[in-house]
Length: 427
Image (cartoon, rainbow, N blue to C red; front, side):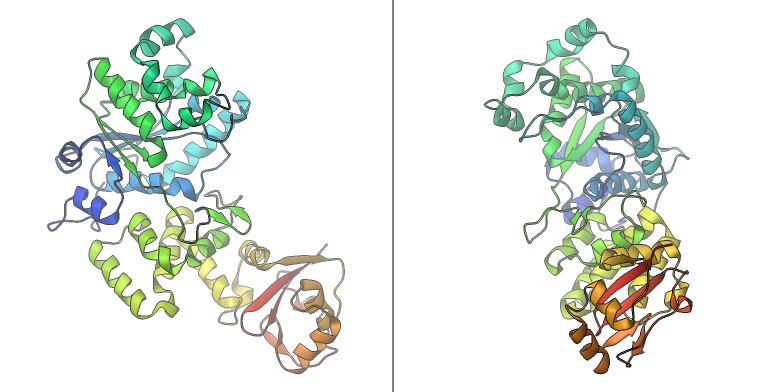
């Protein structure tokens, strides 16, 4: 599996990753360069099933896996059926342990979710693996003798997240997580010839523990690197929208909401996000950055990012529907061409009210929250600032009928050019 958008000639893969700011820590840049630029290498990245879906905070690692495979390397995508039952320590408090049967269901959902991002054919075919396959077979005595023997407690205590928890308390369960992840690297090295692990920068302690453990077991050499923590310039948490976490599962975050998350990226962040997540070439990104700097109001970078990532995660059709919905809601497209699912998702993001019966247009404006009172609603209508399904309403006592409902249940209300809301008639 190769891709024409990967750098050829001017930059190696390592140079391209460095230019994009995708390598924060590494076990050695020269050794990493030898692995990444010197032929096909088997690598792994892990995802713990802590929820029924991955979210955009995981997207950096998903995209990196795809990026490395496109460059000719072989991915092992690990879903932690074992480690997901333990939980990597948090600095704040002990994790709540989910029932094994719940975790097993999440493992399968996440495996299915990862499947479209890589290819499972060819010389560097990807493989999905589950660490429960080898960890579940070990007895406590085997684990302590074969794995625990190689981990000095003083080194484990030196890990930042462990030090942060020593005063408030940390269970042996979470304390031992590092051993489980380190053993994963060893087992993948032994079983599949895996020579490279990467993960988020918060995983550096666990990752280097694995590198050291493999060395102590007389195997290797292996290498590792981390990607940077994705942040927002305004200080808010990346991966959160006004309605909560942005998930990759379309049932948890609609493709429209996913598209809007990227479309609304801050100007200060968007070029960095493009370097992190886009598969466009360096030349294309530099041209786009220049055009964005010259015409920031056009939001060219945000549109490019939103369209590329929505297509990657949800497919071309859902991306096209999200774009069409964005245009139609502001009167630049046909509302009746949107699917019921896309229309409802867009109206939910804007603010969707549910009514048992339809008042007149003034009442609809008030019920939707677009105006504070009936008096204000009538004034807006009289001044030509009210729209129903993108049609201007000028009669203060205008009404709507069942024929006006989109898909038999929705109305799109707009005040002026940019304020809109939705109404759903209960059936």
